[in-house]
Image (cartoon, rainbow, N blue to C red):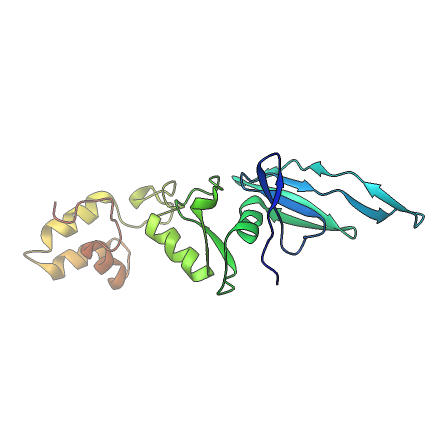
Length: 193
């Protein structure tokens, strides 16, 4: 695998997209273009085809390009094209992580290589994807109420067994009652009301 080479045109840096070196280049700002090339037409005659800038398509807050080589179409996310072309990956890590957790921010300084495990840990650390989930009694599967959990936590310092019994009587398991009591769950409520 050869290191990417810079192609200067009008003081802009374009680099070939690894795996598509003969067909596509990506700019540092995320633009992708098909490069000018000579290729056979339908009759086998060699013709020079012009290059052009591709238009990205949106999907779930991320932008992707449809790259086509030998009539095979590949969906390439903009952040991945940037990482492949501009970020060294000496360990051969498979995934690209958005450092700030914003998948719409494809700035090179906001991208890093990692594993699926790294990405999931980063997502958990930033609490991504949980901000819109219903919490506590608003969750459709909740058996406890905010009032019950607060009553359990008020009772726990003097009578832990009775506090756990309140949770169990509400229909949760012993471990779920313990988790609510200790603050591992129901984190939106005060631990010591």
